[in-house]
Image (cartoon, rainbow, N blue to C red; front, side, top):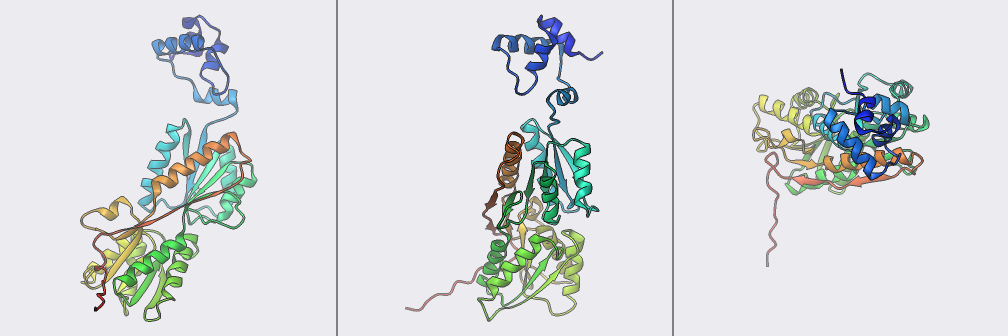
Length: 338
C-alpha cells in the first residue's frame, strides 16, 4: 500500500495537520518540525499528493500551454523549454492543441474544466482574442511570440517582427541582390504581416530593388516547398526572405529539386534559428529569435501573476541577430578610390 500522510505523522510523532502544513505552500512550520516531518517522509518514501494539495490550497499549479503550430518543428524546441522551465518552478504544464479551434470561449471553458491557474498562449498565428478571452475570464495569461499593442490587454513577450523584416531586407541588399521576394507563412498571422511590413518598408528606401511577396498555407516544410515550387515556375527572385526557418528549409528542398543551387542561383534567409537550420546539410543563414529568453520571461511573468493576478500587462521585446551560414552570397564591399 502507498504511504499516506497519516503514516508520516505517526512516524514523526506529529499531527496530520502538521504534515499537511509542511508540504503546503504558504503555511509556516518551525524548522524543527519541518526537519522531523521531512526525515519521516524520506524514510517512508512519501510524496505529497498533488491533487489533495490542490483541494486544500485551491490551486492546481496547472499552467495551460496552448498552441496551434504543432506541425512546425520549432515548437518541439519551444515546448521542451516551456515544460522543463515550468516544472523547475513547481508548476505543471498542460499542453493543449488548438489547431482546429476558432472560438476563444471554448478554450476558456477547457481551462476552467481543468482549473488551470494560468495560461501561456505560445503561438503567433492564434488571434489576439484568445489571450484577451482568458484575461476577461480572470485567468492569468501571457502571450508568447505575440504582437505588442499600444494599449496592452495581456502580457506579451517576443520580438519586434517589423524590425526582423527590416534586418532581412538590409542583409539581402548588402549582398547585392536586386530582385527580392518575401515568402511568408499564413497571411492572417500577425508575425507574417509584421515581417512583410518591415521587409517592404526597408526596401522602399532602395528604388533599384524590385520585390514580390507571397504566402504559404502554414508554417511547415511542405507549405514552404509547395510555395517555392510554384514561384520557380515563373521568374523567381534572386533571393528570398522566408518568414520562418521551416518554410525556408522547404524552399531549399524545392530549389534543389529544380536543379538550382543555393546560394549561387538563389539566396535564402530564414527566421528563428531552429536547431535544424544549423545542420550541415541545411546550413541556413537566418535571423535568430532568442527563444530561451522569451520562454524564461514568459514563465517569470506567469509565476508572478499567480501571486498578483491584477498586475498591469507589459511588453517584453527581445532583439534578434543575423546568423551567418551558407545560403546567401557574401556581402559586397565597395572600395573607395583615393
